[in-house]
Amino acid sequence: MKSRRRDMTPWRDPSLPSASGGARQYLAFLKAQVLPFVESRYRADPRRRVLAGQSYGGLFGAWVAVNEPEVFDAYILTSPSLWYDDRAMFRAEAAYAADHKDLKARIYLATGELERPRPGSDAEDMVGDQQAFAKALRERGYPGLKVRDEIMDGTFHETTFPLGLVKGLTWLFPKD
Image 1 (tube, one colour):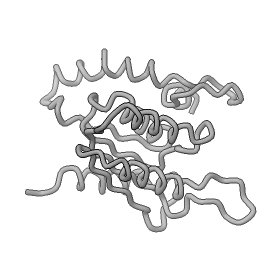
Image 2 (cartoon, rainbow, N blue to C red):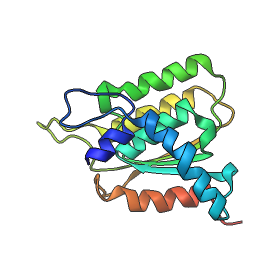
Image 3 (spheres, rainbow, N blue to C red):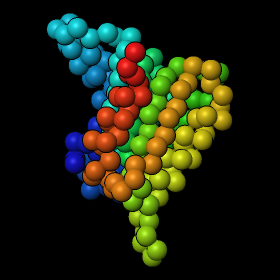
């Protein structure tokens, strides 16, 4: 958990029990070392890169999409932690929109039906956040953006990824 928080959160939060805010460095590592390594050794097409992430990984993917969308072609983001840092991801997306007329990406979002607060709890409303984020992206009218978002019936935070990954891949790469 410590390395996920360190590497996949875009903004530093000193109130957390371990380091955070290392997304920029992690993306630089992916671009400089991981992607060249994979693409030099396997039949990988750099024009069809997909970033899949769950929870903080979903937050990281959303952040990459609005900071360096050219690095990946598509994103599968399950249970993205859009609540992080008082929903700073929404401000990051708005900042991107202020400077760009297009966002060339395919983004699949999936959150579990049970990832919302119960009465009297202080849990995050991840369902509501995902729906609001997808709506914000769609309302921009980016010509190169395709967004699909789903709420996974009967799933919760730990069980959304396997189903969301399969459904996301199926959406991104349909049978001919």
